[in-house]
Length: 258
Image: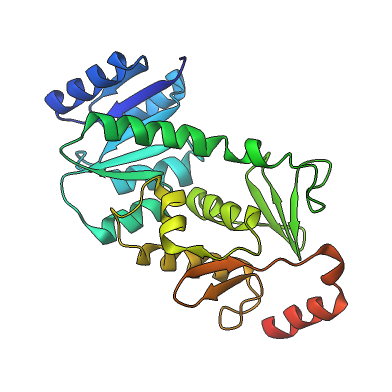
């Protein structure tokens, strides 16, 4: 299989149990008991996915995510493990760059399904970006919509040729909206894309992410150009052909910003 996991948990029993599960399923697996050991292990072992317990000593799971993403600029996928269901904690974890959030006790089949889902989502861009029949996919695989250019090869979004600062989850959600332009997507569909599962977390989390994305890409969140609200359903990215994004729309965008 060649896929590897690093478990970060200061509870020896929990850590050993998770290691046994992953090794039984054919994964390379290592375990450490502190964030300090984890940062060293990430550098030397280059694991494919991190399993991080929320209750780490000194630095909890949220702080771990924040430091790994913002200080180390490392985007290795993270699954946070928590003993309590806390919606705010889950939202913060996802906003800080975690890829999933699971509750104890951990169920083996669910854990394996979520790990596989992260691997699949990691290759999503590669699977869909080569649609040669899409006139808005350029020869270098970039997706264009209005004044936005999404570069799946480098996980970057450009607005008017300027890079937009997005978290991994914001990027994944925006990408899903991008490749489904013109389609109304329910909050449940978007939640499944965000976490790999439906129904476990409050779907209002999607509203939080959409609000953050609009703040970064829209001329005005009160009158969004790109991501439209579809009443009683969810959201849709408006399809804007390259020829339609002319001076008129650009001037409208500029006037809304002024």
